[in-house]
Length: 272
Image (cartoon, rainbow, N blue to C red):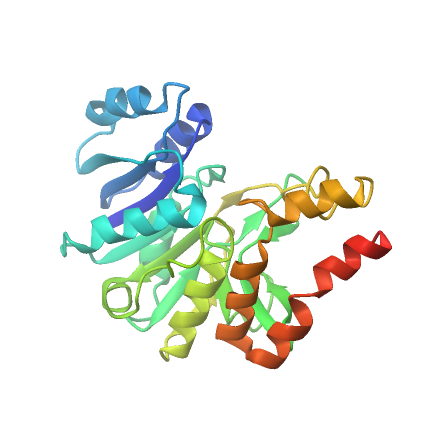
């Protein structure tokens, strides 16, 4: 099996290198496409140095960004580049802050239910509980996590910490929407795959360890002042109004967009 692994990184060299090394334990032929978004900590140099040490059947291409791509922009660039190659059976989107379980890519090959199924590898925290993975909407924009322990592991979208996409699906569904700069790109992409009629399912085994991002210091942190929270919400790594409204309107309709695009401001105002 020929696999393209796509990731983006910025200034966390050790995690990026560890991520790639962890995924290299596989019998498959793997080509890593890594978008480095202007790192200044030696990430590019480290990636170039490890190119010849990955072993037989392993390749690595570094694609350089200017520091303004952020997550969705970086992943979009990796996806664009990989789509031009047209020689892979499977495309795997990953986050570089995951400590992957050894041999997870081989498990994906064994678990593929068919060419019309996208497989999501859920993450667990150090306590063993699910942190990221598949998502199933329950009502409106409210959703629940789908875990490997669930009897029904079908989902509507995903956090793209580890997502395996067969070539036919990857080639037929448009890549991450350019309206998103940092967050929401993966959620929106998963919903697009689902709308196209493909099945999305969480694997029966966890793919690795990744702790939940803390809310402390973000716009959700009620300990911060209202002004601080508002600035953080409208920052690139927050939940900027235009992108959040666009996501809601595109995927849930104008009614939900009008209501839930204002909800964060109400939370900030009342200190929740």
